[in-house]
Image 1: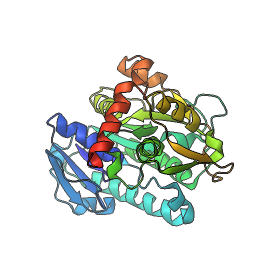
Image 2: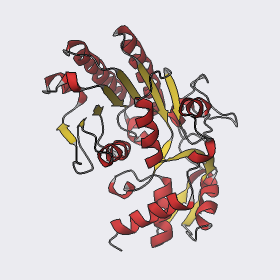
Image 3: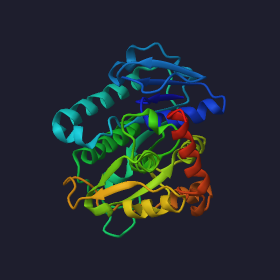
Length: 308
């Protein structure tokens, strides 16, 4: 397996799962925020240089292409340059696939569920819903999804676009972008002030990262994947509801509120995961993100990271 753009939290979570289950795999990224894991062969390079890297292509059964930087604010600063660089990377990626001595069995593209759909308007977004991104990041991913589909079809390689919701979980403290769940838990532990925009009423679908990793692993082993698939818990929480959930576990974040947010912020993200549940034959309740054990594992992990 080859995992491109694996340097962040999502890549780390999935690679940790692979290493814990004694798999070998190859990673490539411009930079890594985590140390090399058992079973991992690592290359520090941009995707654009993939064709120059000495890979055993015949040993690569599947390839995961992650969608690049997830920092919405950075993308908004120069959207034209951002999208052009990502399109070029993807074009060079497929050029490397064409020139490779062997083709992979499966290609996966990791996209962002919340940002490509835009506001849900109280209606759950399924894989066939219209894409109405509000941010430059979301618009970029819509373009990359389309390009990925066209190129994979032209090479006649099976593919799937995985639209992933908001992952949270152990070891998130290692990464530059922490996410709301981690930030609120840290606030409860240390008393740090957190300001919630839109009066804490924006909603998101959260997915526990070990569960996300298991889902992706099982999907890779599937005989037939749909061209697009939501990877989501199917549960949506506002920041206020998330705080209430944390308070049930004696975690009391220190927060204040402000009315406004960024224009590109998604107000409500409601995701339909019926296709995922049917494909893996699992019950929705098993994907409920904020179980006592999940939250306890995250708290324990944060305390370990703080040396307490």
